[in-house]
Amino acid sequence: MRYVRLFLVQLRASVQVTFQYRAEFFVGVFVAMFYLFWNLVPMFVLWGQKPTIAGWTLEEAALVTAWFTFLRALLEGAVQPSLQAVVEHIRKGTLDFVLLKPADTQFLVSTAKFEVMNLFDAAAAVALVVWALQRLHHVPTLPQVGTALLLTVAAAALLYALAILVISAAFYVVRLDNLIYLFNSIFDAGRWPAPVFRGAWRIVFTFVVPLALMTTYPALALLGRLQASTAVTALGAAAVLPACGNSAMDAPKCSAGAVAVGNASDVPLNGAVLHPTPQANVFVCRDANGYYAVDAGCTHLGCDVELKSAADLKQGFICQCHGATYDANGDKPTSPAPMPLRHYLLCAQPSGTLVVDVTQLGVDPTVRLKI
Ligand code: FES
Image: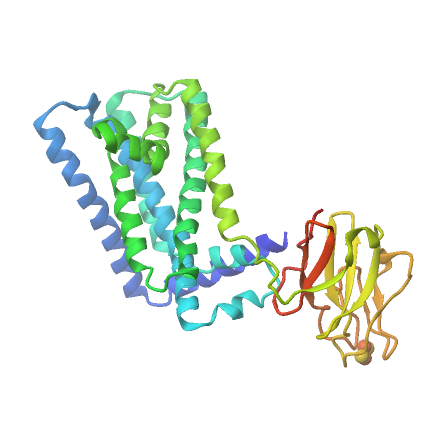
């Protein structure tokens, strides 16, 4: 629920930015329509020469183009603006401001900015589907629509994962623009039905950059020409890449300076153990979801907090100096504490020894170390 609220806040900010200059908004709509028209021109030129290309009629190919247009709207409207902002943050050295926020970093950077104008492209894609189906005199059945929608969701997840993988390179190389242009150029090939490509290109666009899965398969599903086994294989393959994308943006690992704070088995379930470290006194806590580390320093004036009940973490923490209390997660501070207790990154070594890294700030308080 918290993340839904955060998403809505970020979306509202993007909408307000889009509508701040009305003239710019209308120019944006015109440019979106112009690009769509210009994308369709080559198709009409090519199919004007021959009734079918690689076995596809103009209307069938238009369905593929519609899916490409929809996914490109998603890419340019919802994925790339945010991720490109990450590159800017890294260049300017301001990513720390994002990392300091008490929420999942990947979520924050992925939803930071939306180009609302791309909604027109998405609407145009739907109109193109309706036009093509009308011309084909084909009314898709419910299972066909369902399969096409399922493949579209899988394609969106794939696109997001690919974009994350590309953007993650920004942590290692500074000039990333060329990589993004390369990615966009390759994605551009998705506007054509996969059978148009021959030999090595077809293998590349099916298995390396799965454009066929993203645009051709949903169109085939809507036409009722996609075999069930192919659809299942495609959905299975689509589940793998997002996992790679997530791991590329995974939470940071503990640095070499992390301090050992005992063995995981020393921390009872629903209990906490206080450990002094050179930088701060830290409670290593364990609840039903796993282990986590919170700074013992009260956020009022810095006295060390204590467990309200030594035997039950669920009762939370109390500061004896001026009476502030916190819940078991160091959250919900009561007066005079102004904010929740700080969380630190907790990692486990193969031996079971826990190490806490007090140098990394902005750790998501909902994250748990599972052992
Ligand atoms: S220092 Fe903890 S309440 Fe004042």
